[in-house]
Image (tube, rainbow, N blue to C red; front, top):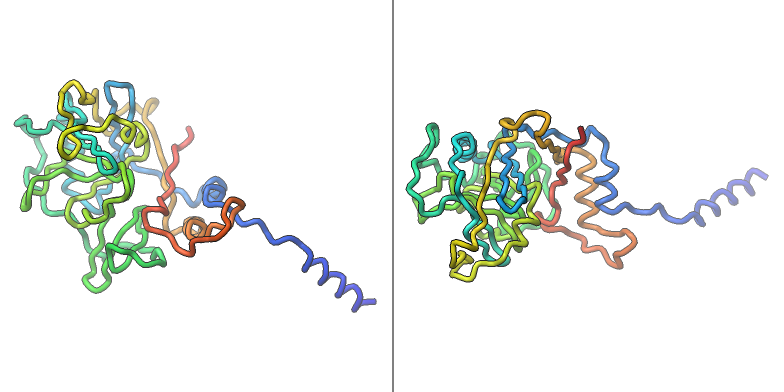
Length: 294
């Protein structure tokens, strides 16, 4: 009788349908509170456009501290008052600032920052992507950011993924002050990595930037000033009254939940997919960010 029961149990186990594999979106939706990290309001730039759109940028001081300090000083000094979006290049970038203006920089802004195109790998807790990268010896995630890194040279850099924000500059040795910024709105231009300071990412409103009319001049500049999109205000979230201040969280890239999310991105076996890719590009495993509930 005991043998019959064991055989019956084995048959039931064999007949049971396989567990349904979760989609990346389900993993994110079910992530525990412990998998999320608050974003410091000093690292949030809120840009309001005159057309009613709001764009929120998370800054990355751990990768470009001088440029980020400049951006904070520029925001506090209202330097972008009267500035505009003046360049929208299809499948590439949206750029804003005061363009060729000779407007004086606010106190505290470093006119010639160092070339913050990469930083030391030391001090970063890296989760390797686990797949080859075309633009760096290794790729992975650290502190909530996608990075390229080189264990031999001990350097790491932020990457030009969709929605990421870089500092406009002239030819080297110019590094840009942070007064002219751009956001990626096309296929990730990773060839720009380690050539320009990447200072953060758009976490809200990238749809409002990517849907703007394209500029018709070379490199997507608007031919007519009337096409430009004026900026109403650029503020740090920490300067906005607490009752009105937007708040966000990003997923801890060292968490087990994020590990499961990346694995699911690389091996899609949820209902829609016929064949899993067996790999994922760094920029296609975007670090989840969510608005924090009150």
